[in-house]
Image (tube, rainbow, N blue to C red; front, side, top):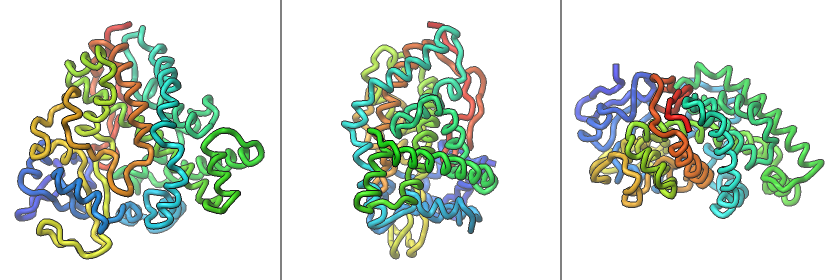
Length: 402
């Protein structure tokens, strides 16, 4: 079963099915038939023009607050935490928290860390380049993403394993198996919350030049941030920053290895690193759909959506829509000609950490391409369902040793 079927003239996509691949030819065929589809999680937008317009339409809000409820989770610590994270907040609370977090994620702040990103990536690649083989997730993507997160938050580098373990389990919050994974999610939430609370207490006693101290100052000096909001925000940043970057690196390498000419070009021209990031996120994003909720009755291109309706924007389907991209195949030399991809969402809820992800991947991908010539997958690996948030659990790669 592919998870794609038809209910009259409108396609039906079973986004809740582990059998559905939202990048598949069946979804592309549904896009030809209609700009939207029906799903168990509301309607899904499949074409670029409608998708990009919807993400900036002020008649819609984020919509993620209802994710636990949509999966049969109606109480418990995960639900309470989920309702308080930045993704679920709207209005002044969302704007206030975003203003407080923004300075740490500005382009200039992140670019200043690029030498550290390069140092970390080089150190990790040095560990396996001479072998000619690597399990990419365990030996590169996860430690790279986790250690960058520790650098951003001012956490000890040698504790990245601890943070990564909890962040990995908490990342299952975005998966379509969220209800089945709930015990692991809530155990990770408890562990990471305890860890972050201890870090906050430490910075209260001994302030440092880091994000935690900056946010703690906002909490203690003018009350713009409560202690609970501080802890919730840091837990969210810890897991979201690690999980999405790790997943996207695996998906990026998967994409580029399917196009060996692009892999070789990136090795020869590392300045194309930023372009490679944009291309792989256009065609193979870890966030495969972006949620919005109508706050009033909306008539959208002939589709009536009552207030409270949930709409999912399918980022791959939109990013490879032939009506917006004349040749949707991967071409890193043409990335600047493409319309902006939707892998980071859009509008008021555009991903806060997008400069981090763009910069650390733009460093990592050319380095991997140069140090892993003639790379190819060593077997199928192990992957999450290609719906919800996706990525590799295991991705062995072989290459010519350097």
